[in-house]
Amino acid sequence: MGKEELMQYKTIKVEIKQLKERIKELEERKTSIKSQVITDMPTGNGEGTDILSLIVMIEDAETELIQKEKQLIATMNKIEHTIDNVENSLDRCILRARYIECKAWEQICVELNYSWRQIHRLHSNILKKIA
Image (cartoon, rainbow, N blue to C red; front, side, top):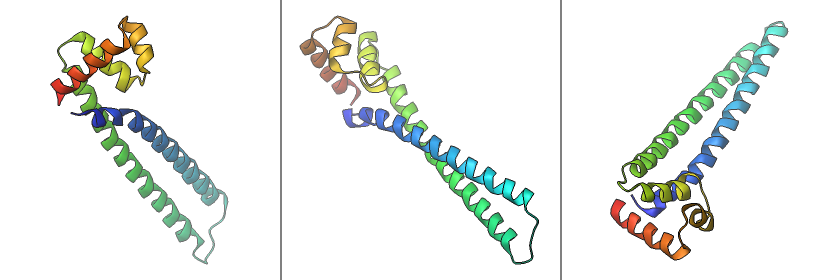
């Protein structure tokens, strides 16, 4: 696994958050449509089937978003698994801080009490090991 793949973790977290918000919006939309169906008397001009088809379309979109979310979570799990399999605990701490917790290098240096140069040297060696 390379640096580019590790860096995906942050964007995946953002994308999952966006997907969850979109799923919530669709769920609210679907609920508002269902309440309209319940409160309105059915008419003979086909409005009921239009509303039903809209609900089905929303549910299909919801299902697709949930599938995307599952794929993204699988990628996140793969990244986490790669980090968990690194032997050295310091190396795992560096990788987690940088890629999972999205911390700045300076913050990592302070937390681990290493210089910026040392952290970057260690990081470079870690990436070579997991590649």
